[in-house]
Image 1 (cartoon, protein in one colour):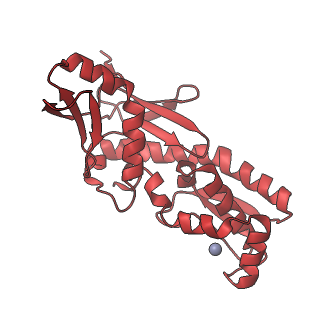
Image 2 (cartoon, helix red, strand yellow):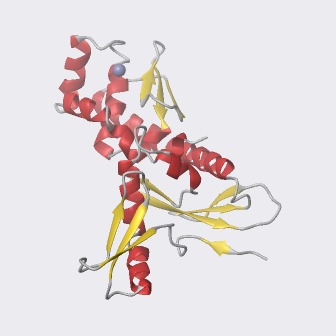
Length: 244
Ligand SMILES: [Zn+2]
């Protein structure tokens, strides 16, 4: 027998009945827990219908609140249901299909839909599959974008690789090989564009000297501001990426 549960199933939440609230409300508590605030005159079915219509918001808000500094414990206990990729303006839904006795495997079911069959209780395996998929997807997107920036700026490079590192968004070697982090897909597009330009400028200046910065800013006047923003960009990355 195959039981499907996907975005139809509601994320776990804590219910709070309120005599003061006028409308149904959702809150993400600091630890990442979801709270559904229900006015006394509203029944649970209505509250849950509201929650169902806001599942994307829940996921996005948790992503924003999470990141390396956030509380990751909750994220590590739940299977990811959505991958919200700001860079490509895509939302990929993850659907889980129960499939007894088999190892988990991931399949792309057309644009925006991923399916993981089997092994749904093995969260570590599930996350491993999603991380692998993220790398594959990033390899379809980032090298092309890098090439476009390279052509526009006339800054050449040798080779580009995409990996999933813990910390660095990108790097450039003295051989002008550029490595990009697949997690860039979670960042706003302009942040990604900045990282691409930053690494391409390292093909000329392999340091952060004034000469390097004037090269970067010559191509992107807002570079310094985007560089500062990048320090906090981890908040765009869903916390489950870093769970074991
Ligand atoms: Zn640099």
